[in-house]
Length: 164
Length: 138
Image 1 (cartoon, rainbow over the protein chains, first blue to last red):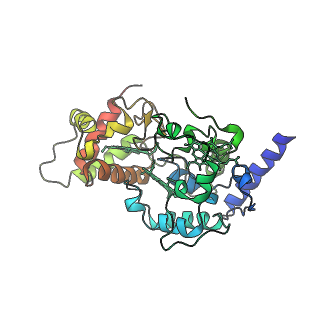
Image 2 (cartoon, chains in turn brown, purple; image 1 turned 135 degrees about the vertical axis):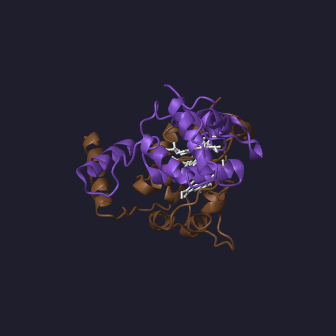
């Protein structure tokens, strides 16, 4: 049954993709649900933003952060991630549409890192310093080191395994 | 989930509803296009797989080489030096998706050459690298 529901969701996603639109997503404002929201997707976003690292889910940053990231791709955290204008526009629209809409401080300069947001720090307050420094983790941005299903957009706490 | 999602996307592409066919070019066609480009430069004498291999494995700026991420064996899986993200093999013999989309090839040459050399690669360098990759066996 569960499988069927999943398949339906998949088909729905494909239909939406064909129509060239993106899927709206409901936002829960409670932090505990952070890892359990349905994963939204867009083929261009997966291939472009998932090439060098996991495609970080749009719901983890507010729209102004995504806009700032998308307007500086030529100098992106020390890498060149420059894109043609058409792809950049499509991805920006997808990210904005599915961005984090919870209340947050408006900063003079929007945060460019998920790992610097308040919610990220709070969700990870129990992760010990030596775990972050483990060479198998290397960077906080390496979500997949601990979130074993990050690649599919699943950050559910049930699928977390901190490497030893 | 994403993989299944992609798979469905490919079916759609195959049916011809989208403008993005799975394989636009072959590696040999990509090489021919690079050759046409390189032929315009004075003194061009063809590509060299040998030069391509040493270019690929030599550290340029920032202590980076192409093999930093793609490994010394382009038929093997690589790993992004900053993020640890796995990178599929770069040699066409080991990964049939490689060098089948001119736009994708151009985009990644531009990005990676800028990261590794602080400049774009010349058509000669790109052709040498692809010639080398085409000699790599699975």
